[in-house]
Amino acid sequence: MISSKTRLLLATPLLALALATTSACSSENTDCNVVEGKCTVTFDRGVNAKAEVLGVNAEFVSATDTAATLKIGGQQITVPLEGEEASGEFNVRVQSITQEQVIVVISAN
Image 1 (cartoon, rainbow, N blue to C red):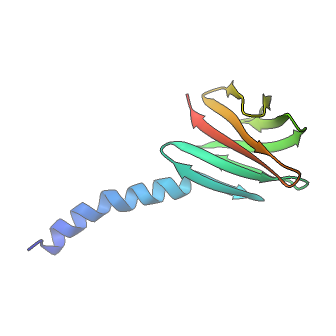
Image 2: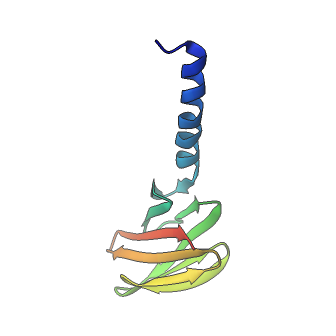
């Protein structure tokens, strides 16, 4: 039988991991999902959409049918659809562009 002290010792790292995962991405007018160190962010178009992802601010600026312009940590970059660009310590990939949303994946280099 596992003692309550042992359960607490086992549960603490799992709780810390869960909190770190949920706090790795906070957002305004976006949907954030963190999986294996990559944050998938769905930016709503036509609103002030921004998120804090892996400790850096990410903001949607504009998009065409073939590219999205974002500010990552204050640095503005344009990323082609299904292409990838580096911005400081992060890689940014545009997964999808629709009339309503732009989906990007942000990961650490």
